[in-house]
Length: 171
Image 1: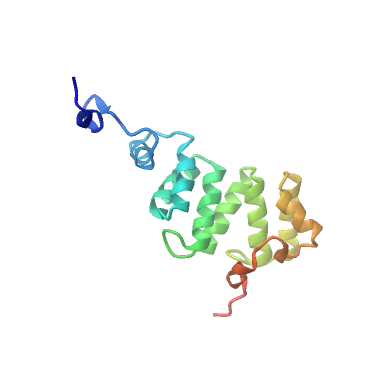
Image 2: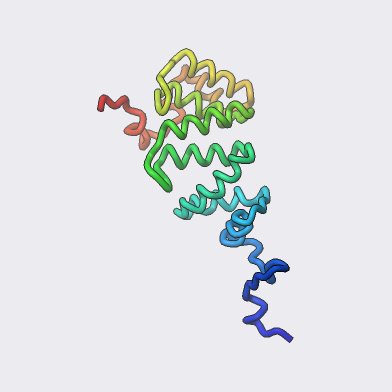
């Protein structure tokens, strides 16, 4: 009979892995790195991001986004916009939001509309931004409808703690 140490040890050989980790971030990353994908892996990416494990989260979200998963794109946008696992990159954040929008995501549309209204990562264009926000509301975004109901007052949807990020920079 095998002892407890043998049961807890992963052993890999030509026939596969004995006792692979199942419900852990490490196990999910190992499967991902071996070409296996599971829909719940993206949920583990969220936990990794919130725990400050940004490189691992990025790896998971990039895999999800490569499979046209709009949630993975939205999280990559958040990481790019906030400089997590790399320097702040508003252009890349806006590109992820646009891609999610193009795949039918109301969150992607709302976020991309905000990018356009602020001129963050893309040229500022009030008319286009409002048009995109209206599209997001039609898609079912309550945040977009809230913004419309508040006459496109960006302060109604953004905490003041982020104001520094949206100031027009002249340098």
